[in-house]
Amino acid sequence: MLYVWILLIVVGFALLVKGADLFVDGAAGIAKRCRISPLIIGLTVVAFGTSAPELAVSVTSAIQQATDISIGNVLGSNIVNILLILGLSALIRPLPVRRNSLVLDIPVLLIASALIIGLGIWGGALEWWDGLILLAVFACYMALLIRQARREQASLAARGEEEPQDEGDAPRTKAGQWFHRMKQKLWFLIVLTLVGLGGVVGGGTLLVDGARYVAEYFGVSERIIGLTVVAIGTSLPELVTSVVAAAKGETDIAVGNIIGSNIFNIFLVAGVASLVYPLAFTVGGNLVDALVALGAAVLLLFAALLGRRKLPRMAGAVMLLSFIGYYVYLFLV
Image 1 (cartoon, rainbow, N blue to C red):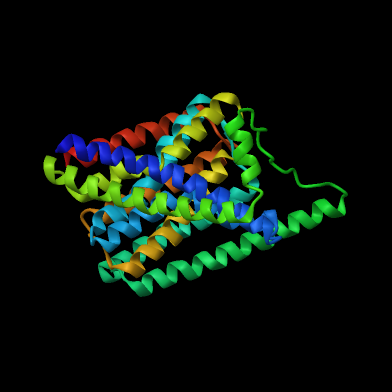
Image 2: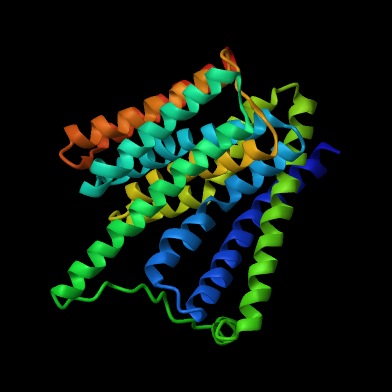
C-alpha cells in the first residue's frame, strides 16, 4: 500500500506542474484575447501560475485540516527557494541581483517574513482576519509593482524603445504546431484553463493525501513532511529552471523570480489558506521554521550587498551549508 501512495505523490506532483503550465497558457491566452496588457498578464496570471502548486497544496491541506502541511509548505518552500535553489545556482555561476530587487522586493520579503511571524505568535494561529491582512498587503504590493512597471514601460516608449517580448521557441513537431494553432481559438483556451485548474486541484489533493499517509506510516510529523517532501516537490519547477539557467549563463531574472515566488507564498498562499481554516502556529515548531525563512531572506540581502549586487559562489556555498544544517536539525531534534 505504501508504494501506491508514493506513486500517487509522484502523480500528484506531475499533475501540479503540468496543470499550472496549462492554466498559465490558457489564462494568458484569454487575457490577450480580451486585450489585457502583456505587462498585467505577466505580473498577475503568470506570477499566479508559478505559485499555483503551493497554493493548491496549502489550500487543500487547510480544507482537510492538515494545517502543519499547509504552513510547512509555505515556510519550507521559501527556505528551499533561497537556501537550496539560489544557493545551488550561485555555486554554479554568480547571480546578478537587480537594483529593483534590493530596493523593493527583498525589503518586502523581509516585511512579509516578519509579518507572518508576528501574526502567528499573536494568536497562536493564522486566523481568517490574519489572512485578510496578508491579502491586503499583497494587493498593495501588486498595485505598486504594476505602477512601477507602467512607468518603466512609458519611459521606454518615450525613448522610442520597445519592451522585449518573449515569443518562445517556434514549435517544430506536428503536435506542437497543432497546439500553437489551437491556442488561437477562444474555446480551446477556456478548455485549457479549466483542464489546467483541474490538474492543479487534483494534483494537490493527491499530494496531500499521499503525504499524510506516508507521514503516518513512518511516524513522521506532518510538519516535517510539509517542510521537506511537499516543499521541495512544489519548488521543483523553480529548482530545475534556475539550475539549468545558471548552467547556461541565463541568470538575469533568477533572483527576482525566486524573491517574487516567496512573497507570493506568504501573502497569497498563506493568506488564502488561513481564510479556509485557521493555521496553527506553534512556538516550538513553526516559529523556528519561520525564523529560518526570515534568516534566509536576511542572508540573501547581506550577500547581495557584500557582493555588490551579485550572489558570489561563496554566498551560494554558505546558503547550501545552511540548508543542509537546517535539514539535519529537522530530523535530529
